Image (cartoon, rainbow, N blue to C red; front, side, top):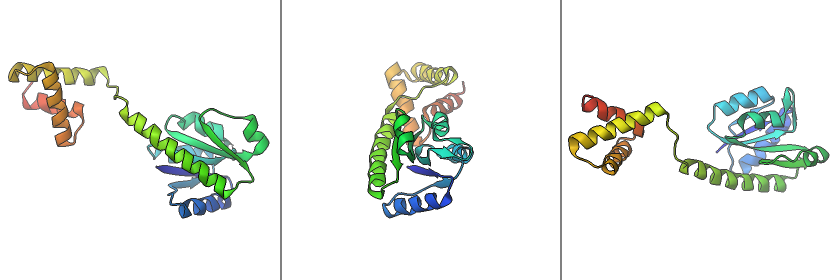
Length: 181
């Protein structure tokens, strides 16, 4: 799990990083602006962003609007601001920040993140029309030349994909190339 800290005052980020490190979390990046946060997020697959409500070049919600589908956001700010701007899917803590409350929230977010990742992996991958046509051509070729049924051809491509450590589409391309289509 990737953790990115975004605070205009690097002293705050440094202190939170130490708290997280003592709790066996690894911080992947510590930055001070929305732009830097988006850059750090683009270099990671997904994770948790812990940030101040207000940053040098924008607000925490600007980060969420850009990466909310891949990252979970923990916004830290004054109690009146945090309560007035309750945003679905955004965790928030008010200042002054208590270490135990912060770590409990991180634990809850980590658990929610793990469940979300598992759910995302279980979703079937949406293939482009071109990719699906390649798979269908490979199945048709296997059915024609090897006398397989459609489910058997599909299972063959899947198994070959797993055995070779390649994607299903790449395996279909290899089958088509090997069978000289």
